[in-house]
Image (cartoon, rainbow, N blue to C red; front, side, top):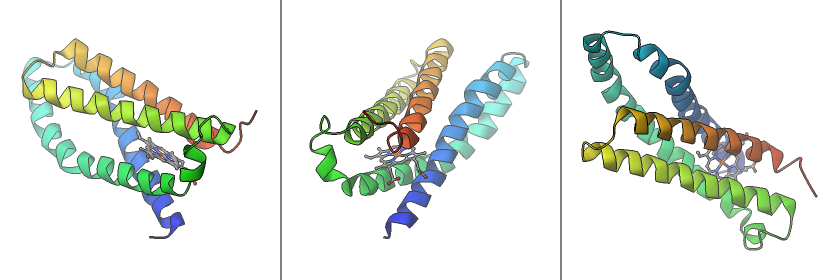
Length: 146
Ligand code: HEM
C-alpha cells in the first residue's frame, strides 16, 4: 500500500477514535448525569452496540496503519535519542501503546463487572489527555527540533 494512502487511513481512523472519546468526555458524560436513570439506560442500550460495531475497526485500522507508517522510520526509531524527530515519534508510539493499555483495562474490568462510573470517567479523561499529547507530537515531530 502506498504511503499517502496509509497516512490517510491513519488520519481518518484517528479522527474517528479521538472524536468519539472527545464526544464522550466533553458532551455525553456530563449530559447523561442530568438524565433520568431509565433514559440513561435506554441511551446506553442504543449507543453501546453501535459504538462496539464501528470503533474496534477504526482502532484496528489506526494501529495497523500506524505500524506500517512507523516501519518507514525504523532506522530512526532504532536510535530514539539520536534526533528530536526519533525521540518525539518514539514518545508518540509509547503514548499510543498506553492508550491501548487503557482500552484493554477498561474492557477487562467491564467484562468482570468491576468498572464503576468514577473509574470509567477517569480512564476516559486519561485517554483524551493521551490523545491530545499524541496529536501535538504527531505534527510537532516534523517541526520541533533541538
Ligand atoms: C491513539 C493512537 C494514535 C493516534 C490518535 C495517532 C494520530 C496520528 C496523527 C493525527 C498523525 C498525523 C497524520 C498526518 O500528518 O496527516 C499521525 C502520524 C503518524 N503516526 Fe500515529 N496515531 C496513533 C497511533 C500510532 C501508532 C501505534 C503508530 C506506530 C506504531 C503511529 C505512527 C505514526 C507515524 C509514523 C506517523 C507519521 C506519518 C508521517 O507523516 O509520515 N501512530 N498519527
